[in-house]
Image (tube, rainbow, N blue to C red; front, side, top):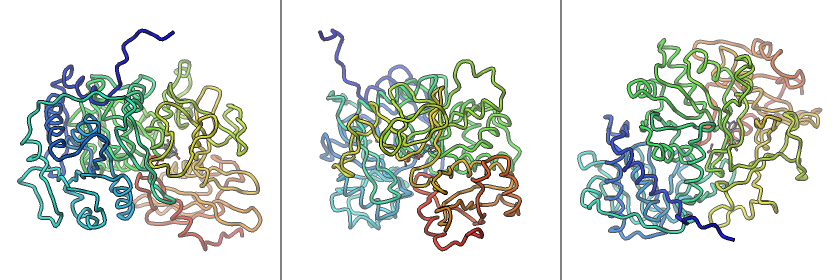
Amino acid sequence: MRGLMQDRPLLISQLLSFAGTYHAEREIVSRTVEGPIHRHTYADMERRSKQLANALKRLGTSAGDCIGTLAWNGYRHLEIWYAVSGSGMVCHTINPRLFPEQIRYIVNHADDRYIFVDLTFVGLMEKLEAEMPGVKGFVIMTDRAHMPQTSLKNVICYEELIAAESADFEWPEFDENTASSLCYTSGTTGNPKGVLYSHRSTVIHSMMANQPDALGLGSRDVVLPVVPMFHANAWSIPYGALMCGAKLVMPGPNMDGASIYELLETEGVTFTAAVPTVWLMLLQYLEREGKTLSALKRVVIGGSAAPRAMIETFQRKYGAQVVHAWGMTETSPLGTLGQLKAGMETMSEDEQITVQCKQGRAIFGIEMKITDDAGKELPRDGKAFGNLKVRGPWVVGSYLKGEGGQVLDAGGWFDTGDVATLDPAGYMQITDRSKDVIKSGGEWISSIDLENAAVGHPGVAEAAVIGIVHPKWDERPLLIIVRKPGSNVGRDEVLDFLKDKIAKWWMPDDVAFVDELPHTATGKLLKTKLREDFRDYKLPTA
Ligand code: ADP
């Protein structure tokens, strides 16, 4: 027997209608590429998104077309997200940190019709235009006064484009499984692959993301997504904020410590989210300038493992609770979040932080298990580690145009490529990417654990660990360190510091010092490059 409830589709445009109706006066504050801070409201955003939807029609685009964006977090980028998806088209957020040839590849692969470009990226588009024949035009996200001189053909000024249109537009209704947006994986090996989200997956993911045990967003929050909108949908925050009517603060291109601090304080931000490298910059700034944080309540750290020292500093020194999160482009991206469970409030602070160092618990909707290489499920005892597999309504089913072939196993599970433990309380801990794990004498050493232990040293700014070929053990760990400004910490001091923090046989065989570490387009350590750089490195133990 079928249920007798209304069969209303879940559509992204409904989020905007909701915010425009029930939180009309709530602000969106953006640091612009042009410089000044811009303020408008959800009512303004709804009106302007409708004007843009009319403009897109006039440009001759239609349902199913792909529209690219090369833009920072800001109010115009938000309007484009909603106007494009709301009209039944696909919003392709391009990560500008990809190599230019990767950008050319994904624009052509996605078949982008128009690209909306922040002023920052006009030069990049000029270089690539000739190799992107399917792109009919470029909309520069600024007003007439700031339009640049450019060699781009068919250039449109964003503000002029929408000013010519009426705000009279009704969002179309269609099947909730229609594609809404597209994000390519960073592609550290091979070409980037497209993950094509649907209205249904996006809305359900955002509902779950807003839950108290997840991001916990509400109408009284002031939310600053430092994580870019081109990095896995800014972890759903630009959807979740509209879903609950939170004030949104958008950082534009400036993610340095001083700029983020200024927004946190002047706008009274209660909630923010970014990768560890961003927080490293902020914490260094706060320390250097002797500043405190007055309004911030929660900080989400994800994309790479949050070091213990970072969690401790945010909570103990600045009074902001850390929520450690794990996810990937393929999981929309949220999979686990590290909120404490009932009973844990009586633990000592140190014990609580030990729990928070794990990547968190699955949110409802995400099923999760670990298996050995033969696919056999491993125990959830917090000790066994194996391949992390997930499934759920916001997990990828296949990549765009079938790249990579069949990515689910017979049970519908997606192999994340991460190696992890699951403990009896449900907390997952990433021990490594499966390709980064160090295989020493038939046993596995977690590079992430070693890195986290090393950055606990006050003289260490950033650390990476890679396996170096060893005649006896196959591989042994090499610790590569970037010193903090002014520090002259040496090899023996670091190794000595690690002694009581890691198993004896995990001790790195050597320490190398570098000025900076290579990162991927989403801020992760680029280990393929490090392995290349240190290919001929001879360990003293070899
Ligand atoms: P994104 O670009 O959204 O970060 P990617 O798909 O590029 O997503 O990368 C996802 C990978 O990032 C995960 O598979 C995992 O290896 C790593 N990752 C994400 N969050 C964490 C975390 N909190 N701790 C450790 N690794 C993480």
